[in-house]
Length: 357
Ligand code: SF4
Image (tube, rainbow, N blue to C red):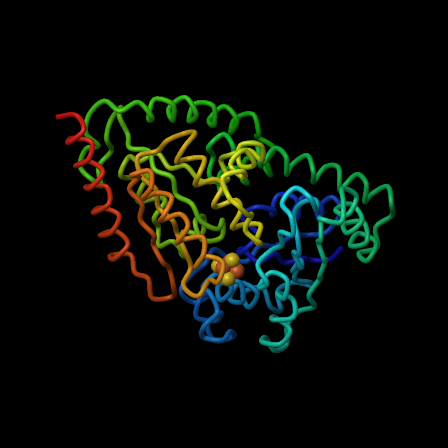
């Protein structure tokens, strides 16, 4: 049995349930790095060039956190995540493509990196092919690999369904991995019911920072999953919004079909997988399931976001939708984030009152 470390960063927020289940079904132990802290970020900053985006710095810090604690660190090389044809020549951001090389070049005495090249635009069978090769490298036989793959795919599907029911990734992961899927699904349905109420404006938002009773404000928070779901990177924005009684919607709460339904609004798809999801999710919340405002969490020095953010700003402006971009880097502080969030909520409340008078 080997111990396999998985850094709690980047694609972790989307694919961890699959990875954990797959390796455990093959008989290995999976260890996640600790939640992001200042110490983890500082280690990542030391390992990377100064103009790298914060998610990449954080990823390096998480790899440092696992160093010498595990037999292997799992770092997939994610090239493309869906079949060629659906989204033209879409790929992952180049930083995902070069991740294992970046680590090898920047961290000394690294535990062996277990790499797997996922280029799913090659076709449906590619995913199984890659994982069966990985399983063989770990000494598993074909039957065990098939069983592990089937089980991991099922858990991943359950996880994605929970996200689409409005459950945040930390809770959804806990539930699917603990096998209490039904309980979480029920909570999701309750939340979905509450969300429908949230879209019916009745009265004021209430004071920013206090729950707004039966008429909560609904906001879309869009951005890359590793930026919006890591509470350290987003400086606690999601929980602060939650405490302020705001209903938060993210692009991961939408199905593939709902996202794809927005693709025709672009003359051309973005080149990058996560950017397409952000743009399509944002358009969905602008036009199909309207929210009262939108926050885009964007990372300083992110190439794809320089296009995505401008595009969202223009589209929101065209529709008269309040829009705020929050750019994060290693210097982003809680007080600054809180102030901007409260000002944004106050402005939404002002708009609501004006509409009603
Ligand atoms: S998409 Fe942007 S934030 Fe994400 S890894 Fe690439 S450069 Fe960094």
